[in-house]
Image: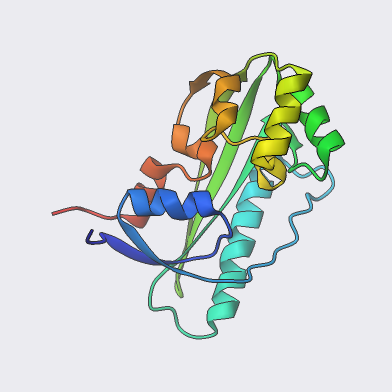
Length: 193
């Protein structure tokens, strides 16, 4: 398949790679992006995702170490419940606590996509509402054991078995996966001729 755009990708997420491939964006993967993702005290979640997405892009630019041939695409996604960030789980106990909070509630998935060139930075943020049903202890254990969700915001991936936990989404499905495709495509300012 011919690509419609080319970027450097400053992301460790296999899901973001697959989503970019889905819309025909070719990327050069920048390995070893390491950014401290600790939220600042009283930091607004929207400011947080913008800061982290930009920091990932800047770390990617430093890794490139030269004038950029293509822009650097980076992103950050968080799960919010009552405007509080539900972090990636560190262990099963942490995962279970997070999923118990989300179960039976509507939460938000917030992603900021950043596009960094030598001259400019563009960012777009997208929010999707997700309603999760009640989840049994057995399902939580099964999910942890078989899907290893320690690298996923909120402790779940809508694209895998956790899809059976989701009653409803309002907004971008790809945003919940980790990269809002409509907005990313618009940000790249690509026109197909």
